[in-house]
Length: 153
Image (cartoon, rainbow, N blue to C red; front, side, top):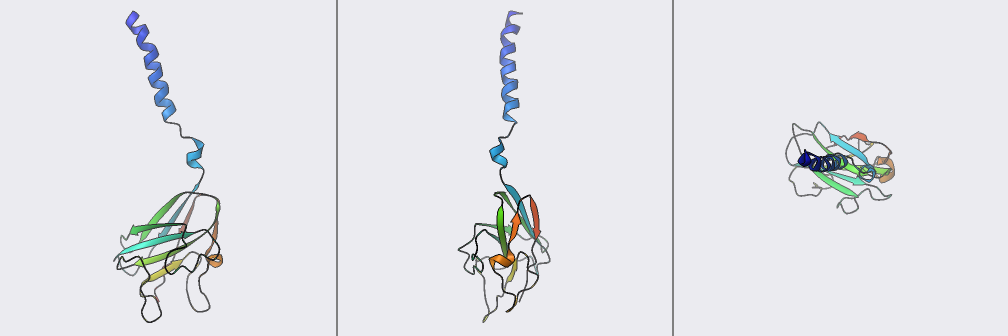
């Protein structure tokens, strides 16, 4: 009986430690989740590069030097997706590259890109419809899913 009384405080301590360890601090959940998907890629070659921007005049960014975050995804059945976690509330834009030869840059013919490009809020790209941060941006204030169309020129 005496041994049982000495074990009870130890068991209570273990239970408290286990229960307290299962609680997450609120600072771990201060940001939002942004899931970005692309579908209907022309093939499953290479990877898809997802660049996230959060500043005016950061797009166009042909050399991928002005992005806020960048993730790459494998392509499965002509589709790909990534999730940006713990993002602060704010204005963002997305630039997608279907990087078929996995060299991390936009390959061009004479003038036009050989690989697919996409931007949030864009269904087409042309001389009169050139992407920029203002046109491609959206406001993130909750967890979101954004589907971006990849355009092949």
